Image 1 (cartoon, rainbow, N blue to C red):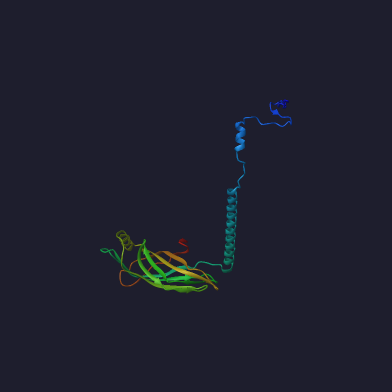
Image 2: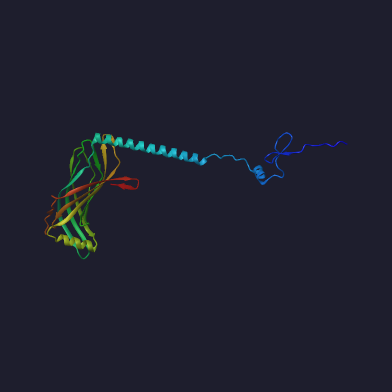
Length: 259
């Protein structure tokens, strides 16, 4: 029986055995590197979801800020146009006269009885704006102590108009604390006179043609007034030549007050 002879594999120069066809055969048994390479899954790059999400957020923020800037620009332009057309100015107030009929302080019970007759001049300097005032509360204080309260009825303040407001301000058995009573008693005996402060508080709307604004709070504080309490039944006129009034407009936005 003839014996078959197979060609033997000849090593190449780098030590790898080759067959007759010249193709390299893997070494046997397989190495750890070969086994790891065979079992390792194919790498597939994942989509960048986070980067896309960030791009969307940046775009949204960009358009949001742009819209806000455009709205602010429109409001600013409208405000400039409104000012150029109407030239708005705050109303002014002046204490024209103040008379004190009586002011009594009871030391034993620390109560105050008083009566004032006051006249306040309100001026509207605007030629295109009409003010509508709600009832105005008025109070008179001395060194921070409330010694009289009253009310001025609602009224309409026309264009370029001057209106005289009159009210009776009084208190009856109004209780004050001991320290305030001591200050008030000392001021009533002072030769320089009793210092007074007049405060007005109300709400007002402005009307410009068919346009009407929301209600706006307004406060008026007038100081520099002095009076000597009467010794008899005749009322005493207070000195108002140095009186100065400050107008404070207060805008309310939601729960915030700006003034």
